[in-house]
Length: 329
Image (cartoon, rainbow, N blue to C red; front, top):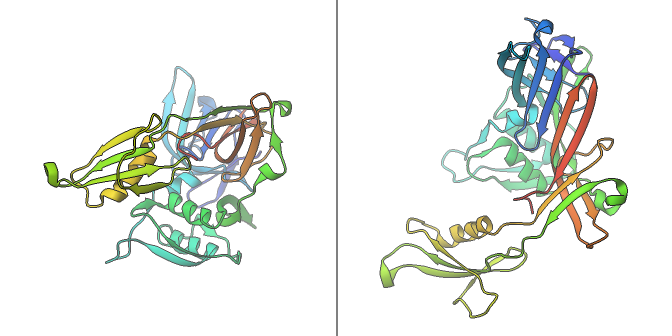
């Protein structure tokens, strides 16, 4: 894997140093760390603002925050990955509107969102027509990455990011790509030398008393039921029963007690937890779906890839994947 360092004008300066080590987090913190021994420090290449990239992948970003350690004999630079740079931009409601809405072909919508936030110097959006149209309303003041991901997920698509070179120029291309469900064709198990962990959370609240505005007998009181799938509905009262578990939600300042109570239900009920270590000879992307089975208990996993950890040291690369996870149902 050949990493290249370019300056702020995207002019290539050098390849990655032999002594360098890299650690990318894609899908969680969306940042990276780059370290070299002090003797290999280059005053032109190893400075904040320069760009690290690897053609055909999203493994790259912009250098920032240099730190020198004479005891460890190294200099370390950290930075946002290309994906992480999108997290530091926000989608604001249109003037006079409650929400920002968009409609059109997927890549065209991504281009509109990116043009609202970035110049066309580093990032470009594919001109390919996916043939898929969307009409989407974004959460108020969501970050650009979350907004794009949610918009694409509503059509079973994911965001693809990769460094592309055309002649002497390179840029980071964004495009909408269909989510691939590998669980239909490949089932990982202990036989595949795959390690995974499943935690089923069964002790959940299934009823809620929600208290809103007002005092004493005049206070607003609503009752809700949450089924095993997480669907919340209003009920007239809390029933009796040994399996009835009630949560008391007290919010005297809310203007939307029902809406806030439903959000609270999702917050208080822990979801199942999953993790899987997949061999690094498989190239999987965020959002793609994998499946696994424990043949002893019969428990199964069908979850999307939510995180990739890429490590590069001594010219050797390793990739590990995380799937689902707490908060990812």
